[in-house]
Image (cartoon, rainbow, N blue to C red):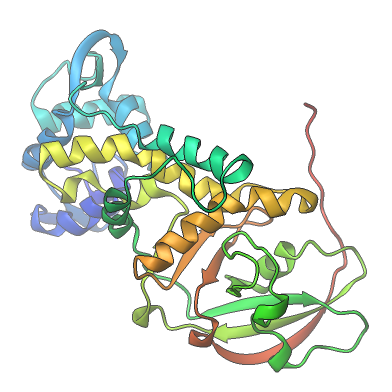
Length: 338
């Protein structure tokens, strides 16, 4: 029986796996064909450090459930609980490990999420510029290093609603001048960033047009190899405990992932336009901190489409291309009862 990196869906294991594999073939667990395969027991050293941050407890949950929830591991569609537990037993050599229950160790606790919530509420409702609540800024800078964006597109798009059928010129499609830059998800008023989407459809969806409106869409070339971008879309999927090695660092990181997930939610959470001036303040604070820490922009999920967005702190980095005209043929709305 041999496993492959696809069984786990972890970026770090994908990078580590070639050094563990001894043959190519069909995976015994997830059925991926023609892929590097390893004997599960060869992974015990890197899995032990992760497993050791959990303590056995009869009131807890299974390790597979913790690993899915904390690290987004065992994400392959074929890796149901039975296969995942079977593979974990083969890795550890503990036949009944799938039936044992665990809780996160008390050695690793973090109050960073609580501190962010306090700061967020204070920035919105009490003290905008000199808040009493503070983040552990040094730790946040460390955590951001785990989230450097990879495999980003070379081309991005910005959309503007036209006042008439006349298309905007490319010179009118960049970030607005400072004197008219209003508040955005990432930028405070008067500090223009360039907001772009990964596709024309994403860029159009983000400006919330109405059916029948005319839209200009410009493309911008942005070389990701020259930039440091923070990717806040899915921290659990980006951060791998297996590349850290040290048990204490893995435990500390597990306590902080919920905090990073919340920061990503700040940039994605839908906000009604009339409340944006206040609701955007926490995400603006976050992005200003990220900019001060030496990053060039933030990648985040689109709340209006399936694409991704980029807030670029220095608009001059983007090279403008051409402009194409679009017309909005239909706008979809989804709603749920409260």
